[in-house]
Length: 565
Ligand code: HC1
Ligand code: SF4
Image (cartoon, rainbow, N blue to C red; front, side, top):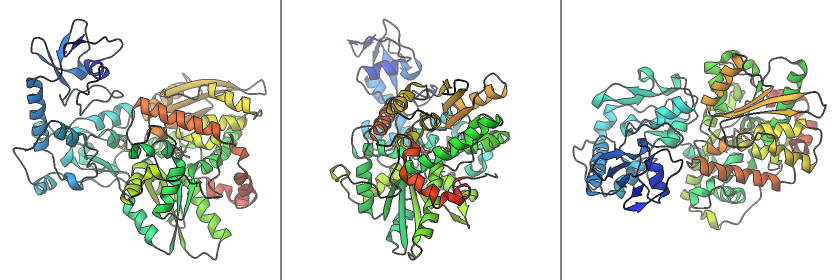
């Protein structure tokens, strides 16, 4: 086809938009994501053909012989008019909006030179129009900033099969909200935050817990202990213009020490503990042959999904706390026991790629004597904000190592951050042959890759048992798998579920990224795993000393949970 007078070949591109972008022209969009269905609502991606007809390029397939232009006076006029209309009904408190500098509407207004908005309305009038919903522990909805692109609605229903939000009313009154405009916290929302990840404006934002962390750091009576999740290290660098997928963990440690965290540890350490506890639980169930498959439990959005939609399956969800929570309960108990003369209160801060971890940390079942095991959860972007606010030049930091003893982890714990990682870590524990070759060869078993559903069989060394395993990410894929299990179309011994498509590397608290970026993050985690001296959880010497010490009689109390919704 011809684009702006130049011949551009196309192959499998599903729409003109993809062909134009392939040709190096960044057509603007507000409602297009290649991983969601095409909605065609914003009309920013319009193109003009040789007859002067206008087409939405996202919903028009490319055809041989087509001639299109992307930047004619008509298109420019239409785009500006569309933006002006959107801005006219948008609450524009941009300087104090958490999306300031990261808002697609703001970017496009600048790009198309919008310097005045007619039909203006005061900020107060907006605030009086729709109430802000901050009932959720993970996200805040501000309908005054919604541009009705429907990205959040499609993400919540298509990808996550939750459908907690949808369009309501018509015409000028059209809005996106939960059924009957209920507070989000009272719906089936699982706190995955994926709606906020695709929201182009500040209409759905992640709860900001940065002020609470600063308060704790500035309080001398508090010992602020941080854990950093596996997936954070391969995404945070992007916030500082570094290469996508680069592992910046040593710089994160250096930055966090400068900020004032007293100790910096790795959630991968607790993931090693999860591997041991979950594998033992799995082998026990396998021996008894009942209540199978065992579903993983580290993803709190998945746990909430089961509670909401399939409570009858809760007995099949592992009783292991997630690594975040294992870390919190262990940390508080360990320091109380080993250092009773330190009278500072321990505050556990997690840095997570995930918004559902905020909700998990607040759950009643994960409190000890009324106190949360994890006190505050920051997202990757929240930590980036703290680094930025502190004036730390991230790229120029000298790399530093984690604190000990909870900074020691195996590669098995590290790969939890990508879909299939928990499964691979469990397999590394289950197999008898722990040689390098054998551990390396597991990568071919079928657990790796960004496909939403992976199913494979694993023959064990006893020559008799063949494990049937499934790995899914995205709750819509989990639902399809559950239906297959229920209808007896399929049987599995072990099922790993992560709510975010691709696993935690694609968590809503990370800088946003589609497939290509996820691939780089996954690659970086697997590369780091290969460089660890310890490749399976049993090898972690700190873990064995804990089992001989504090966990000897308290492993169930500290590492397991029984949810009672
Ligand atoms: Fe995850 Fe997990 S891998 S859930 O994705 O099991 O958030 O990274 O920290 O808890 O370890 C998230 C990541 C994370 C837990 C671990
Ligand atoms: Fe839906 Fe997840 Fe957003 Fe909740 S957080 S509304 S479940 S996409």
